[in-house]
Length: 315
Image (tube, rainbow, N blue to C red; front, side, top):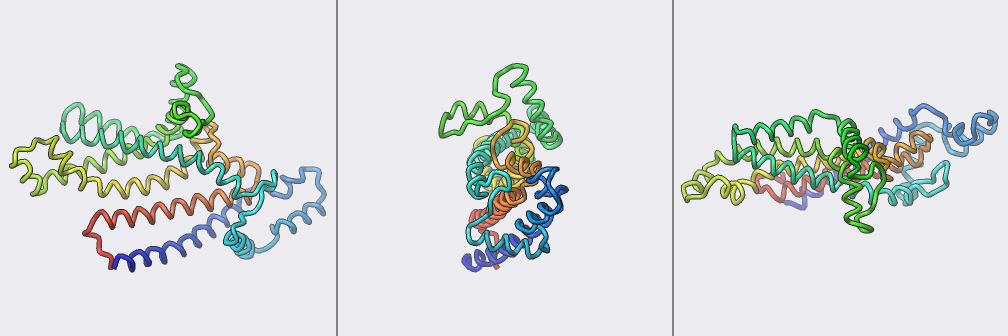
């Protein structure tokens, strides 16, 4: 039965990928600017511009351009940059590791901070700790990540000098340097996630603590802290799994802004550079990989949730 459920999810994912990539492909072509003009410059003749547009396939209908591009994708060829001549897949995958490290660090910060705040809030209801937890989660949800990024940059990099303002060091090169380079952007990126996890986990814990089996645990002499850690947290974390899956996809999209502010050479920065240069093949490659990652994460989240919660019906 689980295999049927898995096959249905895969069948659902494939058309979603096709529709999403076609929509995004079409919108990229609507970006103002002429790639041929951007390559040849303002002094190019109309004849040369037309020849280059024909060569790049820009004069063909959108559907033909899309299916030509899609056929190349299935052959493992995402094209070449219009400006550097570098293979798109090579450029994209060289940046993917940077973005993955940044987003994963953001998720870890969101999970750890959100879980601690939610547990403290439930342990001390209506106390100043509970009020503080609610205030932090509301602030994290309300403040835009780009604004928080600039505040952190101004305070901890420019004013105090505790962290570098720009740049990125991989965790494989220097773990300490990696933490210093990624901490501020990861906090700016993960603040919204921390707020969502705090609110969802707090609500789930309160609901679970009112269940009959928790009353039984109390009757055995367990205190609130032991009950939460030993009995409530695992069940309360189930809805948080879905939140984390959705969050991961959202944060990948949000790296476009955060990586630009901190000059981190990830996929978000590559997408911005491609838009500014009208480098359509590069931008299409970046967006395609982002879409595939987000859909795969959502797919994996559905599968993990169904495995963790036996109440999910496979039919």
